[in-house]
Length: 556
Image (tube, rainbow, N blue to C red; front, side, top):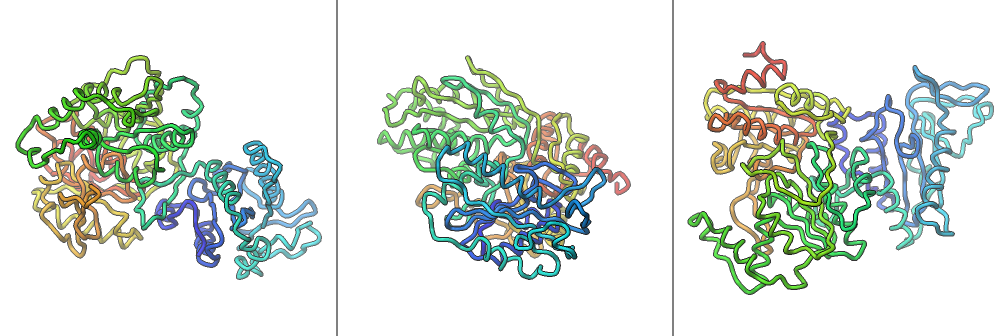
């Protein structure tokens, strides 16, 4: 089975991607051996959208030797004429052989620019026409040795093997070629994916924000990024972390919650540190030979303040100084945290601060950062069209809806009593599974703390078991979860993460604090990448607002 990059085909299908290319991608994954890696573009382009990296190359296949085959796929009927073989569209026509050769030239040229080495990239190409049989090969000037049409469709994998072959393991050269395609296609480790064993899933960051920020020249860097949900803040944090490692620097990445920290840590290279604020304080105090009695956390409201006092009073040794400091979800940090964090920075350390105050869920004042330059982006590449539209209609926050995929919509479910929620959630999960979602694609998120939701004591919802943090840790300090199928989280623990399908529960105005409820809803609604379901108390002020935004007034 071939290795697919980006990895998860099923999620692409749920996002409404172009099915013919997805079908081909599934075939390539199934029919090619593990000697091949397939880079694909179908999850960020659709047929009516023209431009991708390298023109319109649909698949880039890499073998063990670092040799490359570019595949251009054209669906439907084509036209054979004296000028060649073309696919006609409303706004013009395209020649698949011309396109793929142009892509080959562009890739080879860019590789040479990046590496400036005498060794050239070994490139070949193939044109795939799954729905059309070419009748007059000679008259249209088609190279039959580089063509798979409808008459030879069952030979696609064998044709790839014939042209490219598995190759001999080229070691460092193959790694260099693979890294080139990951960088060129803006592909990064998928922090939000479920990681099995040591395999990393990869995704593509929409837009050029990471590249833009990486191009800023400021020494030392003092950069504050205010970004909308879905603009790629967490991916940017990871990218800066990895860049610091490659440059021989020692990075520290601090984020808001433990669940996100663990996911980021699983994707990061060795040589730096990824922690929550409290996790950083804990590890530092332990390194100084002082243990912490966590049994006091619930009894002493000043527990963490006392820990911070210990950190401030200590002399920071050299091995606890960092060359790069990155803060993710900075809107929920306190001013004192930011001040203490500077104690861990070398004098010339780069500092990157990422935040979005529209998603602030703590009553903290914005942190003051002197001598920082600011960068603001409101492009949300995560929320599909119908979810983005729902958010913009129901909440007072502005962003640019930059994801053109349609998604599978929003459904609002009013409930009279919290006791009604388990049945509604069970029906929602069953409906989502019947529409093609896997149970691990679904997350139930409460607007209350995890211990305060009515579902926290439930081991099963309908036909499905619930997976949730059981308040214990393994020997490495990682969180333990109950055995279950569908994950249950609070917004406080799930913040900064995402999932294809999210079911939001416990939507009740918090202590008449409408502004806080709006921020909580914004933070959780913008986590859904395909489908969103919302359970709201029927007599809550938000009920009518959410039903109206979802176009469900008739169901009231």
